[in-house]
Amino acid sequence: MIEIQVRRWGVVATMAATLLLAVSCGEHRATAPETKASQDQNPGTNLLECPTNQTATNSALIGLLGGVVDVGATAISVPAGALTVPQLIQVTVPASNYMEIDVTAVGFESFLFQQPVSITIDYSRCTRSNIDSQTLHVWHIDPVTHDLLEEMGGVVDDKISRHITFTTGHLSGYAVAN
Image (cartoon, rainbow, N blue to C red; front, side):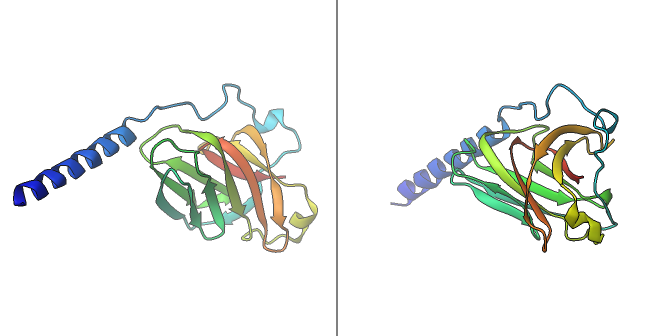
């Protein structure tokens, strides 16, 4: 009887180790488009300046059935079927002069989903009254240089609470621009 229980635990441990190995050996795929656009190539587009000196971050293991990782009202929503194996996803709102976020798959330099995910950025820390009259978009940015790489679009869900949502198939740095 004890020998059977030991074998069962051995099988469970082997399956868990295999799953962890599969996750750590996942396919590394590019997240950014090959072409690079800068603010010089997008005249009139400026990153939304809303300075903060605080960084907030959160992470969660998202399974095959999907899930949400949030930092306050900033969140990524991963639908069922977007992942082929469970993945640890991290959302960071860094200390910055701009309204930017960084979303990563922990352990990967780049990551693509099987289907689009939805990301909501909370820009409520931006207190200028003229923001509500501006057309806002989300841009995929270089988190170091803040160069604009790809316009992601976005829909302002709520002008009062200041949330903008967009969909993407890749993870990287994003910022709100006008």
